[in-house]
Length: 243
Image (cartoon, rainbow, N blue to C red; front, side, top):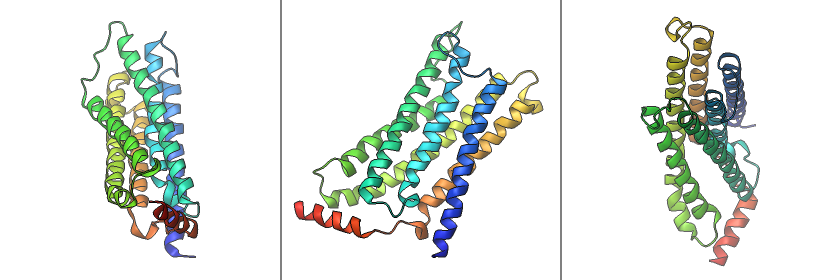
């Protein structure tokens, strides 16, 4: 077996373990230190959906969607395209719900909390906009019929770059949001004394960074690139013949 492929499999499994641990710890952090989850009747608890769904959707699913082509290298490319789009769609749905909960928690608070004033909110919304534009552009370029193959080839580097850029921006925004939550909400004892809630927040932040670094490395290392399989060649030949 190719040594590069062995290394990839080890790092891929490690990435999944880091990602799942990250989700479990966010759920634990919310449940043990911030009262769990709630609805609009309790804005503080409704807010807790925001870090949980952003972690699941905008970090874990987003990262796995980026890796789908390299993680399932023996699957037909058409199937991978649909899976890539499907995971992105699931991430988008969770992200929209997460955004709604944070706006609800601000608007329904007594007194209301201002929206969109922090750098976290600016960068976070920018990441969501980039993600959404990427989804639309990717669907038109790579899933919708009619676009010539040479245009798809030309668009691919941009699609890859902005996908990774948006993912990195999501990680950076999550770190800022985690820090904001820790500073504002961990007060007795304060975050500066590094109580258990603060320590757990820091560990989650480190896992965000490790997960992001692993995803970017696995997605950009040339030796891990997926090689075309015969079904891909047949599909491409058929597509070119129909143009």
